[in-house]
Length: 523
Image (cartoon, rainbow, N blue to C red):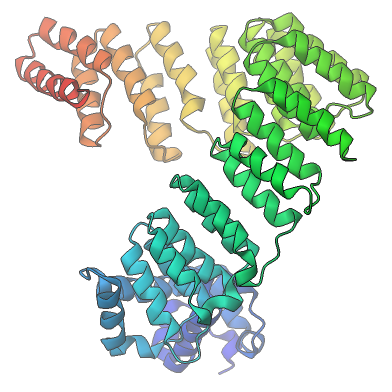
């Protein structure tokens, strides 16, 4: 029988071709399940039916085999209390000799144990000893990251200093080290890590200096970063990114004047400010609602020949809309069109939101139905959600449901919880607690497999209480608590009043007990 004509079901492979199955499993473990479909080995070239297996669901079978090996490894070390015990447990288990260890598999294990540094280190050390296996820079960096995240700083240092790993240390590795040290509040050690780069065969240059400065600025130590920069700049030349790091740092520290001064310093050093430089400061001014300075800076950008981009315009328009300045926000759209800046999906989403808030329903629909398709900008979940919210805000439920249907049929994106919130609110607002509400809830759970969060549960409990559906509100409340989603105190209070009014004594007692627990947890 020609093997290419054999139906490649899982059962047939297992029963008829056990050696082939073993070869496949070995190949999966060798190249990693994620890249197996692109493997160009002789096995795949000679057996077209195996390609069919991969395309028709067989990948799930192979992935399950990989998972079983992972599960075997995990169960072997589950009860270990130190990295030495993990190492010993794995070394003594002979069943692991049946497959070849790969960096991909080690990475998966380290990811599984990223919150358990002892197990991760035990796995790493065990893998190091396996014949024919060599760590990659990715597995090494992951182990460094695990130790740093666990604040095992001394262990991380000694790990770095093991000579057998020296060839795996890169600037990316040291960036992780510096960031973990800074995150632990060990600023001086982060600086020492930079000073010791030479010991690891790395250079103290512009790139490595930027890593240190960026690390310190992100930890809100911009003044310390500035002191270090003043010391280093005499022998390490800064670049535009160096100054953008400081612009971000000063803005995050709400010291916008220093950020603006950095623009001038940047020019003095022969570096041209870019749109990111200016837009960062504009965003900071927007947060302060200082639009006088926003527009002045936009004018400065234009005068310098550094035109605002779509992100700049989106930031300004959305910030104006949040303050209720809808007409001013819409003028940003006109200004953007005049300079020929092309809108993207984020801008259109924001524009639809602004038009909706401004009460311009027809214009919002025009952007959604005509402008975006004409410009070739594909809608995403936020686009549909905005239109649904706008229609619900105008009490146009059927139009909102039509948008939802269009979203489901588009194939571009899927509904999320925020898609349904305005529809549920409208149902309660209209006082129509009927089959449509049940249909919406059923679609959320059964059709789109959405799990309710605290916002959705709160919306349902409050809406049902106000609709005099106390028993149903309590059932949803119970489900919420059963899923370990703690209700807000206000929700408990509202439901308690309703169950008491409906003589639901047992329910009232359980709610009161939960309220006492919530009060105690706040102390």
